[in-house]
Image 1 (cartoon, rainbow, N blue to C red):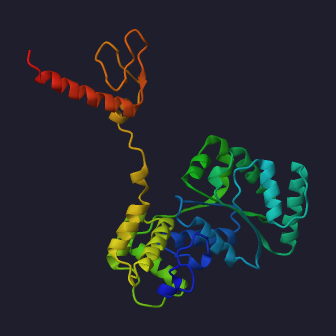
Image 2 (image 1 turned 90 degrees about the vertical axis):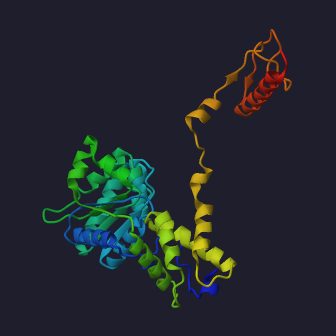
Amino acid sequence: MFLGFYGLREQPFGVTPDPRFLYLSPTHREALASLYYGIESGCGFLALIAKPGMGKTTLLFHLLEKFRGQARTAFLFQTQCSSRDFMRFLLAELGSESHEQDAVLMNDEFNKLLLQEARAGRRFIIVVDEAQNLHPSVLETIRLLSDFETPRAKLLQIILAGQPELADKLASRKLSQLRQRISLLSGLSPLSLTESNNYVEHRLRVAGYAGARLFEAAAIRAIGQFAEGIPRNINNLCFNALSLGCALRERVVSVPVVEEVIADLDINKHVTDVTPRTALSQEVVRVDAKAISSPAGFVAAEGEAAESLTSSEARAYMQQVTVQLRNWNRKPD
């Protein structure tokens, strides 16, 4: 590991949503403030929507830390489930010892927990992460949970967090009642190059780094550009750059190191490039046996059915045809 080589106390670019490492860009700060205000104001339903890797989960953990000791909280991420499964996951997250399977009885158990916290003067916050995976029927179940309230206040605050597909679902006519209950909607934008630099420096400081600049300025620009301002991508690039830099004994991560990491992580070079010509070459090729003879035996003998060739065999066959045609053109009449 590179921790000792670079004088780091812990891994600065890990994959876990540790709220200590949260970097508050302008949109992250605005989203956090909006969610905090929504909970304080008892708005009921709130939503946070952003592309993958933008730090939604880290921000949500940071938000719940602010309400530690003031609220009963549940954080759910198992979203590929039925309504019954969702209620079981929710009660388990809340520490309920009930093993009830009946939907009505599970709702009664949940209502008791809500009233218990309300009498104690505590808020009740449920965060549903990766909510874009929820089936519309489960989202409707969540909407019905918000009906638990007193004449004076909402007993429950619900945050739906997810990728842009969540917005698509909420915009559908079937979920219009749920959409109408969402009081505040927040989003997160990719980091600019300046913010990407500040993001890297912030995580290094939290991890205990106190030395001179660890990445060349041009190296950070290359990371920010290739990562497209997405924090998760920046983490991945920085982790690999530090690993390679340590292996090469570079005290300051240089541009060539970052370029090598980018080349290694560029998934596009592994993607099949299906062009129209490639697509055509992948079709089954049938050759008439009478057209030309093939010494490689690609074509069926006369009177037999034509043979189907793979794309590689077809290319090899056409190369042989070209050679034969060239030789015939050189023969005297």
